[in-house]
Amino acid sequence: MSNVVGWLFDPSGLTPHGFCLLWEPGLIWTYALSDAVIGLAYFSIPVALVIVARRRSDLVFRPLLWLFAAFILLCGTTHWLDLLTLWVPAYGLGGVVKAATAGVSLFTAVALWQLLPQALTFPSPAQFCETNEALRESQARLAQSQKMEAVGQLTGGIAHDFNNMLQAITSGLTLLERRISEGRAGEAGRYFAAIRQAAESAGRLTNRLLVFSRLQRLQATVVDPNELVRGMKELIERTIGPSVRLELRLGDKVRKVLIDANQLESAILNLAINARDAMPEGGLLSIATAERALGPAELSDHEGTTPGDFVEIAVTDTGEGMSADVLPRVFEPFFTTKPTGVGTGLGLSQVYGFVRQSGGIVLLESEPGRGTTVRLYLPGNKEIEPAASAPKAPVSAGDQLVSETGKSVLVVEDMGIIRAQMVEVLRDMGCTVLEAKDGPDGLRILQSNVPVDLLLTDVGLPGMNGRQLADAGRQLRPGLRVLLVTGYASKALEEAPLAAGIEVMAKPFAIDGLASRVGDMLRR
Image 1 (tube, rainbow, N blue to C red):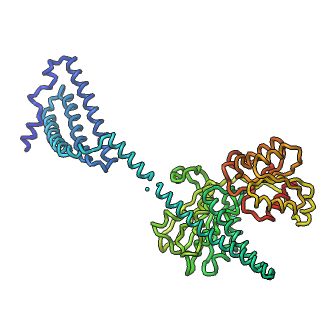
Image 2: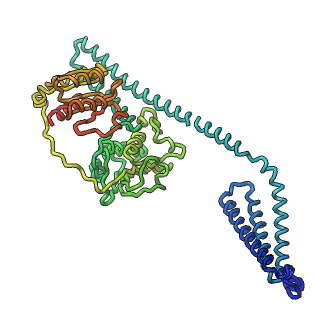
Image 3: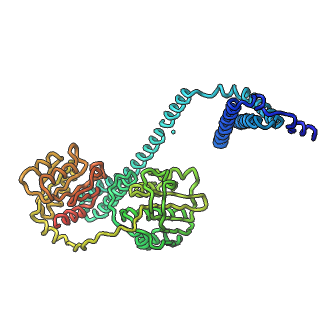
């Protein structure tokens, strides 16, 4: 072995390659520069192949990439050895490298021919495009089908709940008419109560649907999350009962949020009710607040949410938890894991819709037997402070009737029954009431010389909507007070911020609430 090594690497008696070139500087440097450049290029190519091989472990020809990398690396080495032998007769070392190159090139060639049949089956770019297009169409169909299923579930749930409410109303009215015709009017009170309860349930149902669809107009105010949760403690404890222990873990100096306080209270109460139902044998309900900074990475799956500082409200229970197949559906309207007749399946969907409409996100973590945690992330800001407002003195019904006498209100509502009811209550207040069935009819009154102190209009009017009527009316009568009533926050209310003197009231509303609101606006 020592004789072989000596024979390979002993350069004595050998002459450099440059001697064969008769030591012509032009030829020598042509060879030297060419071999140097080729060697550098050969060394850069394996680096690219190695990166592809490491990052694309799914490629079927990945082993071939490693062979190609070794082959090209050895080829580059031979060129650099050719550069060396221009001045140093290291032919033995060059021979070893060439032998290694020959071996690797042989393996590479064999592997390439073995892979060739598979390579020929690879789709062409045109076939890739066709396949991708077919996949997109198919996905548009694992999405339209899902949407239709969700719509079917949604409409079915709405129909079920509304039919129950309508049944209560129609049956109550029938019994009410029967008792009055029998001269038993004294029993009417309980039927009125049942009808009112059913109507209020319908109103809550539509409100939840609007919150879920993010079409409800939120009344945002500055809220201290800790104070709000602390103020709900007694209500939550009464709701969850004695078998569930409530624990509040409120963070120090948690920033305030601009939020609809009533909707936030409703969301927390819904989560508390869900937690109670998940702990039939009792357990621990924890409500915690903290400040969190969420960046683009945390919000990558939540389009439309701006990175920044958030307030986290986490509601955790030690209940039954949910399985992995249930979790993707928990925010769907009318989806519920509760028995039939227990809950509407709108609690979590309402929470989700409200938080998303407020610029936040909802995360839910759950595991069977280990409980559930729902985290509400609400945009926070330490700088916002509540605007000071003077307290309003209570107004009795008698004072209201007197104070509104002589005031003129224009009522624009396309549904005759609702318009008649509003007109009646306003006249009971002592107001002079003008009526219009649509926007153009109302605009003609505003264009006349008839005095109008307040415009009360529905938003969803046919043709000219209520917002357009209000804008036109204020151009004709600057400073005209306007009360917009709407069953949902339509696009008309999103076009521009409402000017001072224009307010919004959501349907369905209590008729006494309408009277109070109109009275407040007329007295300002």
